[in-house]
Length: 252
Image 1 (cartoon, rainbow, N blue to C red):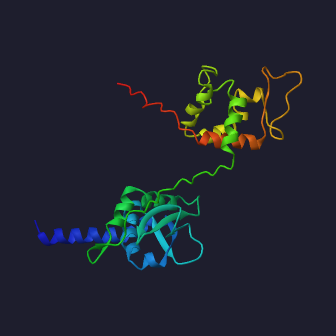
Image 2 (tube, rainbow, N blue to C red):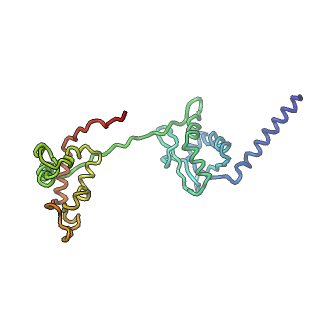
Image 3 (tube, rainbow, N blue to C red):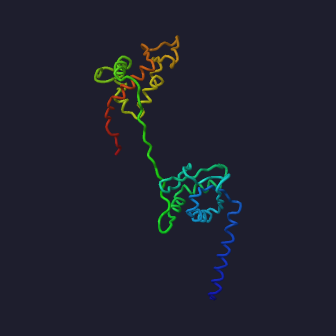
């Protein structure tokens, strides 16, 4: 077999691939605005040819003006981080299927690995996105806890065990204040208790709840509280230790 013919055939095939690659992406194009400091690293010339080879979509990078999407600081979908600053992709043209393809690639495992593998002088240029844990803000309650203790007993104690003061009273099927306090959403439950069953049928909050229908009177003696009194009850409940309900039952 003539070895020179084989080499010529391989060369011709490679040339054909080079010439056909633009044709692959012809008509499949999108535009991307990229932060100048990201372009300066050389990452765009490193990653986009890989994307085009894989998906046949040509991406035109612009510095300003209209684009189907952008790769800039604090973009919607965080892709990578550099020096503690997150860069993300924001899609502007939701009807551009080729931008959607790029978005899937950039935010997927292959795109992220491609970016994180980019090095200069043997050192990685980008890192995985910086995730900042959200700090839950403490809720400040303005109510009077001492007054709230008395109100809780008088207004709620006929059904709920409020504390040691009425530990032997209350309705057995009604959760105690300590049990309610152990729930993650206890505050929301207390602040809106008058809208949660069965309370609407016998609770009156002036200027908040609707008056009782005269043809359907309250089944029990109504409870009337002002919003200020409700805040006092909530402030008192916040001082309570949540009930220890133990660990969830584990199924074997």
